[in-house]
Image (tube, rainbow, N blue to C red; front, side, top):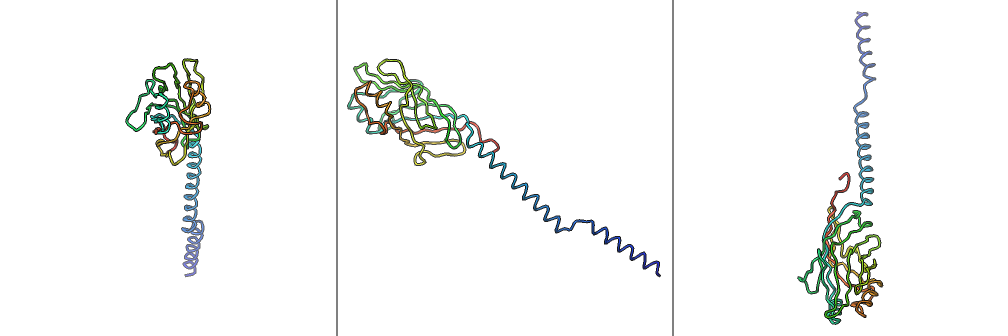
Amino acid sequence: MQTFIRRSFSHMAGRQCAASYLPSRKGFTVRRRFLIASAISVGVVAAGATLAAAVGLLVPVKGSAVFCLTPEAASALSAQGVGLSATAPAEPDLSGPTPCVKALFSGSASADLADGGAQLQGGMAFTRAGSVARLELSKLTADVPSRTFRADVEVNGAPAVTTDFLGFSLDPAYVSLSGSGARAVDDPAALSPQGAAAFNRAFGTVPVSSGSSLFRITAEADFLSGLPGF
C-alpha cells in the first residue's frame, strides 16, 4: 500500500513538473500577436519608404498637348494680320473656337510633378501675311521645377536663341494626377517678358501683355513605368 502511494505521488509530481515546462496558451497567443503586429509595422514602414522614394523618382512619360490661343490673343493677332501655324510633326487643330497646335511629347517626371520635363515634337510659327515677319518656336520644352516652357526662338530669320517663352501652372484647378499619369485642361500659359520681347522684334507689337495668357493648354501624360514595389 505504501509502495502504491509513493508511485502515484511520483507519477503526479512528474506530470506537474513536465507541465511547468510547457508554455501557456495565453503566453503563446500574446507572443504570436506581438510577432504579427511587428511584421505588419515593418511592412507599413517599408511601404512608406518605397512610396517616399517613388514620389521623387523620375519616370519616363509621353503624351500629347494642344496649345490653343486665348480669345484675347487670337483677336489681337487677327487684327495684326498674324496667323498661327504648326511645324511638322506638330499639327494644326482648328476644331475649337480659336487656332490651336497639337503635338506629341516625351520626357520624364516625378509622380508628384515636382520635377522633370518634356519636349514637344515639332513646333509652331507666327507669320504676317505678305511680310517676311516671322516668329518661330522649335524644341519647345516644359521644365517642371520652374514651370516654364523654353524654346529655340527664331525672329525674322535670325539665328535661334533659347528663350523662356511661356510660363505655365500646375494648379489643381487645371491639373489632376492619377496612378498612371497626369491630365491638364485649359491650363493657362502666360507670355514671358522674353516672349513679349520676341513678338515685339518680329511684329512691332504683342498679342497680349507679359504675364497674360497667350495659350490654354490641354494635355495628357502617361507614366510609362509603375511605382516600384506597387
